[in-house]
Image (cartoon, rainbow, N blue to C red; front, top):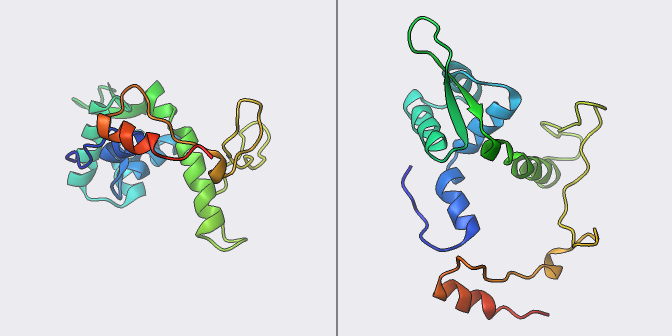
Length: 161
């Protein structure tokens, strides 16, 4: 997949790797326990060439690592790296949002639960440094040190109140 977004923006940067119809499904399957090419292929329904491309991208980005399991020549498994495992928050948020906003009540496709208790995870919400839940209007974007001059100008023009 080629880079599409040149903006200095974390969301644009995320979309450069994960912004297609397939890549997050590979990550989903890795979290569900898939490790082999054939498992990813079967569980996502994507074509072999697309899966091969997405696995290469995720390897290049350090999200997955390839492990030679040495069965009948070169055979590999794909495992999440620490960077890949840190995507769990993103997947939980997407899963919870889609269940709430896209599926009718009582028609949730997948509920994510704690292994230890089997209880559904609480809804992820943004919080301030004191733990207070924040609504969208209570969150302010500020330009970071890696922001381009254009991004700094645009973001710094956002009113603080």
